[in-house]
Image (cartoon, rainbow, N blue to C red; front, side, top):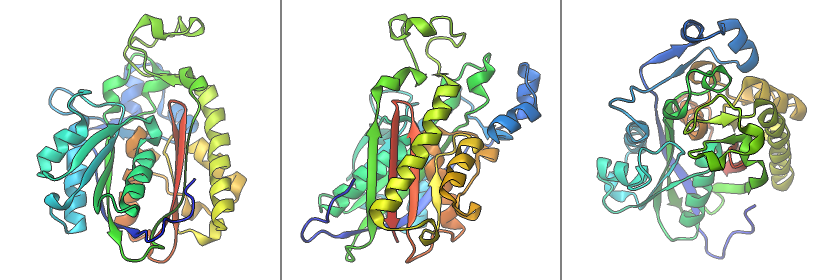
Length: 336
């Protein structure tokens, strides 16, 4: 949680946003032709109707990340040279070295920016935004580009329906800058992790990383594995806990915020958390039906769609909440 503002601290303003998704749609009917499933089965359990997937022969995570960054730069009305820091939250980088952030900073001409990737699974964008906001507020940097981007199709075993039906590829970006008003920016944040639950959602590369109780998992090595029931229980409880804490610590109520932007994991998880906190459905944005779960790409994709639709209103705070593999979770409440 963020404590009192440092003496002389500046505020932080969102200048603009951008997002990118692949053109190719992978529908539930497409899955029904690939494996034993149906549109009705997938929709009832997840709320997903289709998801977007890259052509991995010619594209990857950095492709989407750069497009989202380019669109955010255009939306912000700045030059790439003004960016001091680029952070990319992702688990699907093409290479660990160089980072996606370094590649796309060079790609857009952000020649004055430090750049690195951050791994926190589906919480990656919110983790990254919290870190960048703190650096801007402390006066270490002036302008930061924060991206959540995933090529989930690169880590999915499409012979297994339990995981592959859930995920899609997407990226989103927010550009933030120092502001003279110290009340602007993140007024509350929380980040947490519990590594004891790591095997509920993980990507084992070697046999030694697979626990004995998961040895018979049909998903191949190198691809995402998930214990759906365990993740569902964790997510519903953690969503409620994190949002309750954010409201309590800020003194806000659900009526006070313009939007609660939730990680798009499963519509049943989102609905369960919303009902427990009695939040107006119009304040919980849902696009999982069109894009599936895009991990670190989901929150910034929602943010960009809401930003461009005018749903992030000046003078009214909004909240972002995410959870993911690790297990990790994060929240960020912003005053606009």
